[in-house]
Length: 128
Image (cartoon, rainbow, N blue to C red; front, top):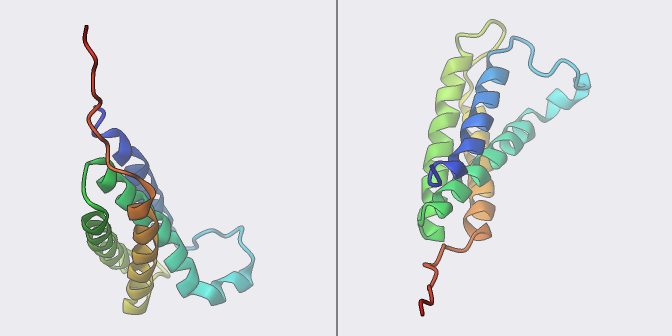
């Protein structure tokens, strides 16, 4: 169970992203002008995902470089599947530029996440 704990935030956040992508009008409470920053919003959303992925991979014992690469790959694949998913939602579309922004955001977040944790060391026990 301990190995699954770091993945809980990843799964919850991915579920939130999927739910938001299922909406014909995502986040209607945001000011209308903010949608002119669409690519920045995509990058920010996926930076959080990249960070969570890299932290979960690091907690599993991967090196920072491998955690970064894994988070980048998983974040990019999730972004591609999210864009495909949006093509089935009314008034949404599949945009390769959004996917590029998703991937760039995942990379930025993965850098932070991969460097944020130190690998676990085995605890030495002193027995008398």
